[in-house]
Length: 259
Figure 1 (tube, rainbow, N blue to C red):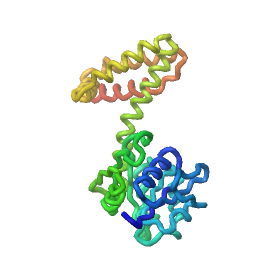
Figure 2 (cartoon, rainbow, N blue to C red):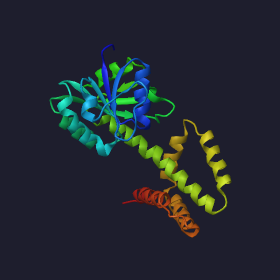
Figure 3 (spheres, helix red, strand yellow):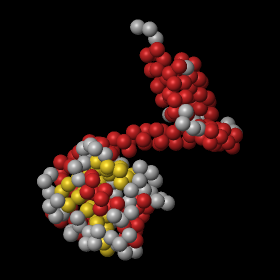
Figure 4 (tube, rainbow, N blue to C red):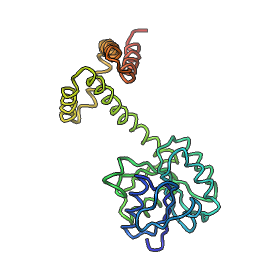
């Protein structure tokens, strides 16, 4: 990979660790972040466009809100055929917008970081989609990154990332709400232990039990979550996840009714 220049836009937690990993692996890295100084070995640039000058691959790790503006501002500095890899967590629609902005000038690759970056850095598992995804995977793989290439357009990686987020972040939100209520009831340590034990006992059959049980017992569980919602209100904890679960179970129960 000698001679490859990689630009990293956004040097916060994720971008900074990935940039540092690329430097350690021998890449020439140019970076820009208006708020964060670059890691050791990364050449600081005064703007996104300056960081992209001469780069064959750009890693956009700023934010979904800044992704389109960063590409638009950098287009004049990008060499034809350069790869613009968007690593931000964003909708498939935004990834498609970036591909349209790139037009014939740059090749946009949709990249999803599939686990937290701290502790993994450049070795964070990535999923990539788009016509240039395989080439992106080859280059980054040469520096030690693990990139799974999807046979799909720009937006396919984002779809998988966000579907996983519904599960994982939703579970985290449910745990947070439950522990907040338990704290109000003076039962936080008991509930922490209960949740911990349930996670430890989970196995390959857990998913089927969760899904099948929700369908089979939708009516009873709907009432259970209605009661849980009332409990949170009585404890002074604003219920968000509990009523959402109640409503989903209500939909499942309704679909079980004969037509």
